[in-house]
Image (cartoon, rainbow, N blue to C red; front, side, top):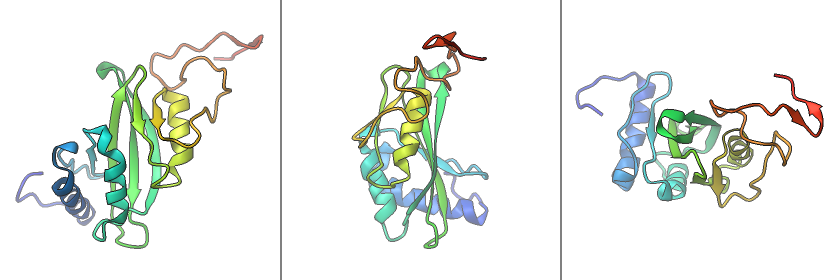
Length: 172
């Protein structure tokens, strides 16, 4: 974050929230990105994600009490997959921020925050089902959209649709 830069009110609120998080967790989080659409930072030390999430939810100047969305992302050039969590202090402080996390594209894992925000439960399952990363500590880590015996992860950019499923032609 550059000193002396003037941001819109909502980006300034997000920057203030990031500063509190950065003060507590230091190098575990990236620099703040003042993206006007959705300001964000990345969790660089995945082992700290649950602690960061609890801190963001419970700190009196943060109160990120609502996970509006958790979206999976494929980064094939980096050999990573990840998630973007859109968090809000809904009806309390009325600020918002996005948090990005990345893990290995093959066998990667991110700590679950379903115990912090209950909406993460099904969102994490969907990200697993579509991208293949698992969420350690998740209470019910299984597919949610595809059948349990489906091959592969359909939203990976290099996904090849199977030709048939249990003898039925798969349209594509």
